[in-house]
Image 1 (cartoon, one colour):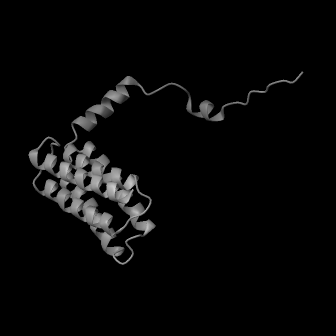
Image 2 (cartoon, rainbow, N blue to C red):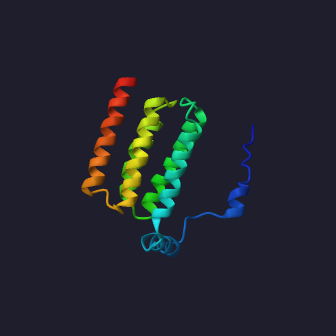
Image 3 (cartoon, helix red, strand yellow):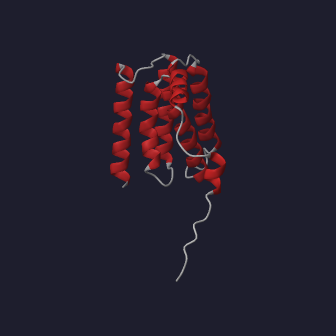
Length: 156
């Protein structure tokens, strides 16, 4: 008769089991909600990185490195928008991230879409539009979604 040997779970022994303490979660949530960091310089830095990546790869629009860089920067910007109370940036960025996620490569049309996005996001930051319900933000999101939908329909 064979015997089943259950190995020791060394990681569980080192770390322990159970979840986070309720107090720790409440403290973290409070810190997020009361966050007063100025998001404008952070967003401006990310948008400058997008512009730099596009310029660095201007001759090679099908670059996998460009795709990777843009997706990384945009994903960070989308997350930071939520963290720093700029759902407008998150909403606009989400549209472009969804498009890039559906692709395997970048072409010149995608580069143009990202350039338009960068200008739109910069306008949102410059105008200090925080809410994704704002008329300007809603119009930008609607227009970007339309552009992305048309691109997908044409290129699928």
